[in-house]
Length: 237
Image 1 (tube, rainbow, N blue to C red):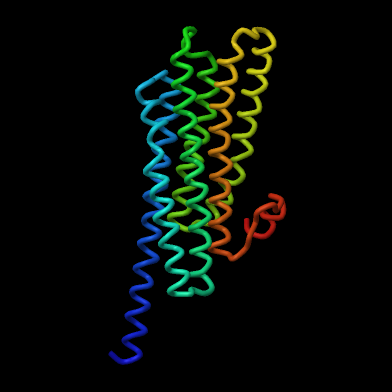
Image 2: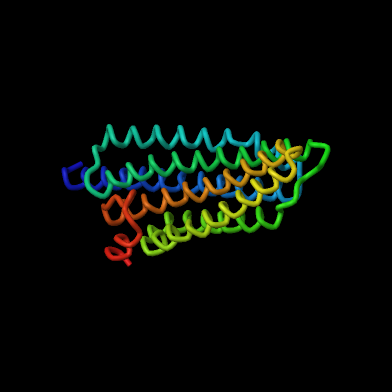
C-alpha cells in the first residue's frame, strides 16, 4: 500500500472511530433523557415501581461513561488529533460527565419519590408546580441533545437562555415549600424530599446548559463558560 492509500485508510479508520464515539454519546443521552422522563412521571403519579426502576437503573449510563471515556483516551493516545478533532474529544469527555450527572439526578428523583410514596400521608401537593418545572427541564434536555447531535450553535445558545425560566420556577417552588414548612413543621420530612426532587430537576437544567456551552466550544472554538449572556449575544446572536 502506497503512502497516499495508507493515509486515506488511516483517515477513514479515524473517522469511523469518531463516529462510533459520537453515536455512543447520543445513545447515552437517549438513556438519560428517558430516565428523567420516568423519574418525573414516577414523582407526579406516585408510581413506586417506576420510581424503583429509575433509582436502580443508573448502571447502564455509568458503564457507557466508562466505555466512551476509555475510547477517547485511546484515540488521544493513538491518533494525537489536532484542531477540531481534538476539540471533539475534549467535548465528548465533558459531555459524558454531565450526562452521567443528569443520570444521577434522575436516580435521586426515583429514590426520593420512593420515600415519599412510602410515607403514610401519601404524595404531597405541589404536583402542578413540579409538573411545570419538570416539563421545562425535559424540553430543555431534549433540545440540548438535539443541538449536540446537529452541532447547532444557535439552538445551543437559545437553550442556555431558557435556564432562567427553570431557575425562576425552581425559586418559586422553593419559596412555597419554605412557607409551608413554617406553617406546618410536622411535614418537614416530606417537604424536604419534595425540595430535593425540585433541586434534582433544576440541576438537570444546569447540566443541559453545560452541554450547550460545549457545543459552542466544539463548533466555534470558544469557551463561553462564565461569560455574560449580553456578551454572548453580541458575539454570536
